[in-house]
Image (tube, rainbow, N blue to C red; front, side, top):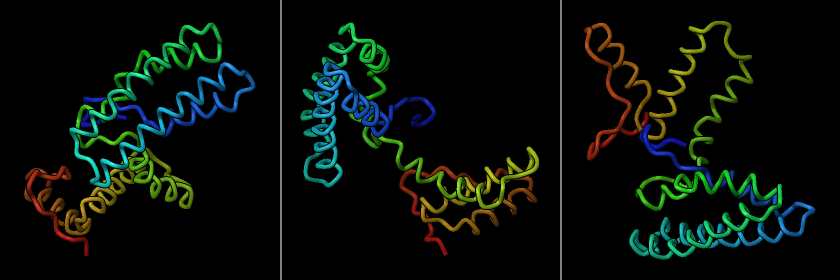
Length: 192
């Protein structure tokens, strides 16, 4: 997933599913590496939850995760050079993109999974299924934009209606539309 359009963070929920496939494999070598990787993934998320719950600070979180990262990367190397076709492909791909796995421990505020993004998309998916989609490109663009405004305002606890009124007023006054990007230090109005 992208953060700020510049930094990439891999989704650990997807990685966990890949690791589970190793564990469910019939090959003993894949099972063993899968269990070893899963152990590190669990340790990582134990620390993440301690940090998110305010039980450890950012500095301690990073310090506690450092050996987990080292071990996880070592396990990927073990799989990469194992000679086992199942392991080589997955571990090589993850190892080559390993920096993307750890962006969230370098930059505070980045989540290790894309669960929030997937939850944010859920209303659009439900809308599409219930309405049978759109019949034109312009209809698709409209739905994309209105759902983006709606969900963004909901997440920011802003009134989508007030935002749309401000956007229309700006349009007719030939001024730029108000930003959906929150300003640091600003307080958003509660949704009506």
